[in-house]
Length: 640
Ligand code: SF4
Ligand code: SF4
Image (spheres, rainbow, N blue to C red):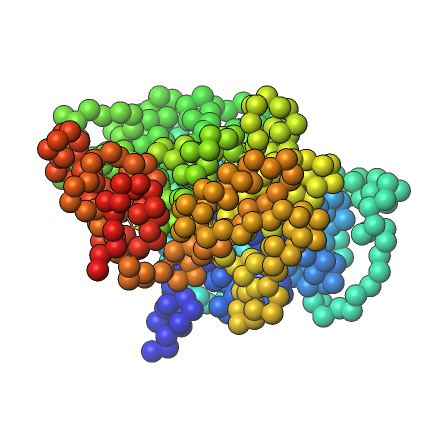
C-alpha cells in the first residue's frame, strides 16, 4: 500500500483541513508561485503547499507586497496564488482594485479566510463584499473536497474570464477536516466544452510557458487605458453571471417543494444538518449571483429563506433582482452561525411545519443562555459552559512580559499593535492603550504625541514581524516629520501569534528554508532611517529593561528600544532547565502575580501574619527569572 507522507494518506482519500485542501488544489492546478502573509485562519495554506516542492512558496512582508508578486507572475503567464486572512485583503486592496481592471494572464487566485466570530482577529468583516466591490468572481467552498476542487478550477476561471478569482473560506472551513479524493481534480464541463455565451477573453487554456509580451493597454492603467478596461470589467460581469447560472458550480437540490433554503459556505452545512428535508440552492459561485437559478428556485418552492453568515450579501443581491426574501430578519448579522442559531432562526421564521422537519436534537442545537440546572455536566457538548471564564495570557516566560510590566509602572500611554503582545493590554498587565490594525502603533504614537493631550511622552509598541509588515514606513515618517516618541520593537525572532512563521528578520522562508543569507537586521534599518538613539535590551533582565525604558521615555528625541529574546515556543519550544520557586516567608504581597505569568498561581496556603494567600510556581515555569526581579523582597529563588 502506498503511503503519501504529505497528505498522511494510505489510499485515494485523505482527511485534510480546508487549508491543506486548498494547497493541494493549487498544487494540482500547477500553481507556479504562491505568496501571502500569515494570518489566522489562513496561515497553514502556504506551509502545506511548500511540502510538495512544486512551486515557489514564500511569505511576503505584507499582503500588499504578496499580491503584487502574484500579479507580476500572472503578467508573466504563470499561475499564482495569494493567501490572506480577511483583514489582510484590506492591506492588499490597493493593487486589487486596479488588478480588477487589468485582469490576468496566468490564473491568479486570491484566498481570503474570513474569521466570523473574531476568534483571532481585531474585527469581523465579510469579504464577499470585496468580490462585488472589485467586480470579480468568487467561489465559496463548504468542505475540504470543495476547497481542493474549487481552488483548482479557480485558475481556469481566472484565465477564461481575464479576472482574478476570490476563493473565500471562513474559520470553520479552513480548520475543519473532511475527506478529499486524491484522484484527478474534476473539471467544470463548461470550461472545457466552451459555450460561446461564456467566452469572455482569449486567455482560455493559456500556454503557461508563453514568453513575456508587452501589452500597455492591458497593464498600464493610465486613465486613457483604464477607462476602457473599466468598461470591460463591467461587461465581464454579464459573462460571469451566465457562468454562475450554467457552470454547474451552483446547484439546486430539490427535496420538499414547501421549504427552500438559499445558502452557501459553512451555512450550507448547518442548514443541511437542521433541515435535511428542505430543498437547497447552494451558492458556491456566489458572485455574481446566478439570477436564472434563483428565479427558478423561487418559482418552484413555496417558502424560501436565505441563511448566510455575517452580512445580508446574498439577500441584497437577490433583492436587487426584484425578489424579496427573508433572511437576516431571523439570523444574526454578527458572529458565527451554528446549528443552534440556524434552528432557532428557522423556528422563528415558522419554517418548520412538521416535527419531521425538525431533526436537530441535543444541546448543540439549542441556543440562548442556560442556567446550571439545565446543563448536563456529563454531556461533552456542554463542556465549554462548565469551564470558569479565563482571560488569555502571555506564555510562561514570554519575553514581552517584563516590557509591559515596566510600561505599566512607568504609566505612559502606549499605542499598541497586533500580535501576541496585544495581550499586554489585558489584566493584570493593562499596559496598552490601543490596538487597531497591523503596523498602526508608530503612526498612532506620532499622532498622540502631537496631540499633547496626555501630558506624557508616548510609546508605540509592535513586534518584529509587524515592524517589517508596515511599521517601517511609519517610523520613516516619524523621523521625516521630527516626531518625538519612544518606538519599542519586541523582537522575538518570529511571527509568534500565527504559529511561528519566518520573516525578513529570521532570514528564512518556506522555499528558502535553509538559507540565512538574507537576514535583515532591524537595528541597521533603524540606523539607516537616521534614528541615533537606539537601545537593545534583554527583557529577561527586568531591572535593566525598566531602567532603559525609563531613560528612553525621558528623552526628547525619537528613539527606539529593541528587545532581543526569542519567543519561547518558536521556532522550537525552549526547555529552560532553570526553575524558580517561592520561598518560605513570602509575604503574599501579590507583586509577582501582577506580571500575569501563567506559572505563578495562588496556592491554598495563607501567610499567618497577614492572612494573605501565598503564590506558588508550578512545573510549567521555564525559568525566565522575570518574577525573581519583580519580587523586591527576594522570596523567589532559583531551585538549586
Ligand atoms: S507564543 Fe511566544 S510571543 Fe506569544 S505569548 Fe508565547 S512566548 Fe510570548
Ligand atoms: S521564572 Fe517566574 S516569571 Fe519566569 S516562567 Fe518561571 S514563574 Fe514565570
